[in-house]
Image (spheres, helix red, strand yellow):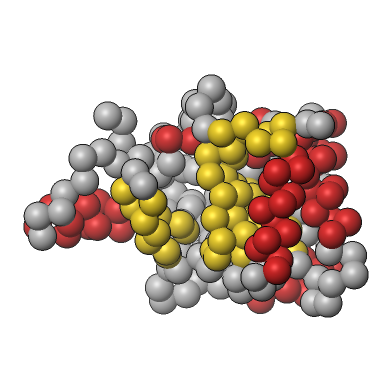
Length: 218
């Protein structure tokens, strides 16, 4: 049974893809983009190692609670291509009889031309890919993307039906979630430039300044 190292999972996710979703953040990122908001996901030696079966159990629970899709982010999901392929293959099987079918949205910092065979096989299982490094110097208002260079690639008929209207969408407000956990609070989404620093200043102004943040080295 293959295993996959994850930073966390969460349901419901409403800020990374349409509808109500199951979110998986993998652990480990060799790309280390400057300005990344998730430095806690970089170290491949931390996080939690789960069997694919354990992760599927969490997905099944999310489905039972109304999940309409799954979003896989990180970290860098394609740094673990074999386990990711095993997981997404099983997810694909679980949705074959569901109507409407849940969709798979996969984030990667790689461009398609950079992928090796194993990474390409895993990426092919997603209905939609968001590709490209996070570049702090190229801010964007595009939905569900962190920088203007990132592309939303619609790979399947389901992906095209569900996401075509979002490819060029620039909403007035970027969807974000703020969720508590035992170590503090964490943010789900792709904040626009300046959002995180304004949030930190606002918390400090109210006497709630965080001891540490994931978007700045300690």
